[in-house]
Length: 104
Image (cartoon, rainbow, N blue to C red; front, side, top):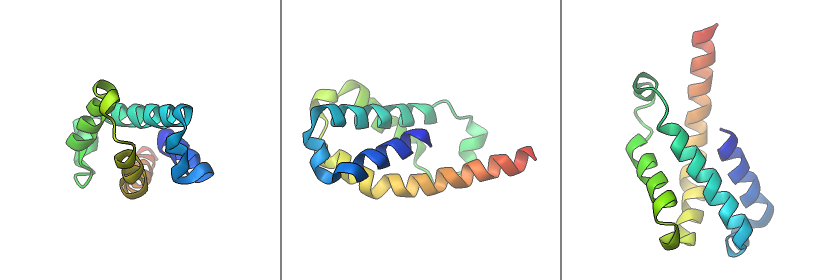
C-alpha cells in the first residue's frame, strides 16, 4: 500500500510531465517494482481471497521492471499508473480490511 501511495503522490505532483524527469521516473519504477515484488511474498491462501487480482500479471510486470529496464515504455507505465493502480489500490484496501477483521 505504501508503494501505491508514493506513486500516486509522485504522479499527482507533476502529471504526465514527470515521466520526462529521469530521477522521478526511476523513483516511480522502483516503487512499482517493490509493490509488484511484495505480491510474490503473499501466501497462496491470501491470494485466493482476491482472485480478481491478476497475481501472475503482477509478477510478470515486476520481471519486466527488474530485467528489461532499458525497454520500459514510459507511456505504458503512465497508463498502468492511471488505469490499473487505482483498481489495485481499492482491492488492496479491501484485503487489509479483511485481514484486520480476521485478527480481531
